[in-house]
Amino acid sequence: MSGYKVGIIIVILLLLAGAGVFWLTQQTHSSLGYPTEATASRRFMRLIGLAHTPREFMPIHSGAGAGHLYIAAYRYVCKMAPSDQALNKIDEDDYPDKNPIILHLAKMLEDAATRSVSRRYILFSTTLRTPTVAEPITHRINAMTTAVSDLGEAYLLDKHYRRAHKVFQAVMSMGYRLWIHGLLINERSNGLGTMAGATTGLKQLYRKGKLKNKALRHEVSRFQRAVRETTHRWLAKMKVIHVIDPNPADMVNVIKHDADISWRLAAINELGFARWSTPSRGTRNAIIAYLAKLERSKNPFVRQAAKLSLGLTASDMNTM
Image (cartoon, rainbow, N blue to C red):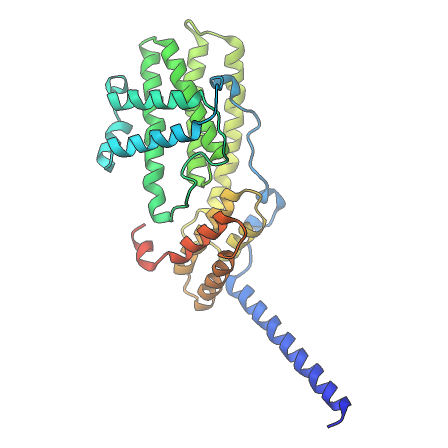
């Protein structure tokens, strides 16, 4: 065979190989589908910020160590209320100022509020949780912030204004830190709600009584508007990503392009759901292949999230 013919054969083989790679690529892409308009804009992928900070409504920091104190408070709640029933008693107590658990918890959060945060993620950052165990943790965090907020309201009704102020400052501090330093969507969502609740109490304090302050009341109103705007954008994004039947291509789009690690991790979790909700074997295999690729990411949180998402089983889905 002449060199010319050998060359032609090599070129044909290379073209066939290239076509095969292209076909596989297209198959994988089409198996995952195509992103919808919901995730198509650059604005969707930008960080959702808070226009103002609540520093005027937080205690002065006198040293580091807030993260350890918040974790200690969380563990205290786990110890004192190990069951959902016990947790609900704390969460729904009509007399929080008479409940020793809530009083001690408030003291722990007040101590944490006087300390600064020295690391990026103040709560539960050692390992990520699978979606099947995320909700009990979120439930405890909600109970913590709700119970202490109710204590502030009780102090306010009894005209213990300075006690109420200290409590609402502690609640505001925890909410802001959950928002700024939290890693997962549920924690950060709780942070927004907690800040909104704290502003209601603070606004009442600054409206009348010994702590009446027109300037601070104005600042609280300004901050309230900022929290509402951020919450509106946050919930709008959640409606796209946290859905019963997630679009795999939308989730991949978020994982690749979103500026916020919290949403990228949420989208990785959603791919784990999509793997079991899709009727298409091709889509399921494409999701598995993509998650396996993410397991080799340089980001440790992405690696953990991908591993947990791959580990989701059909029985896990049935328990959620």
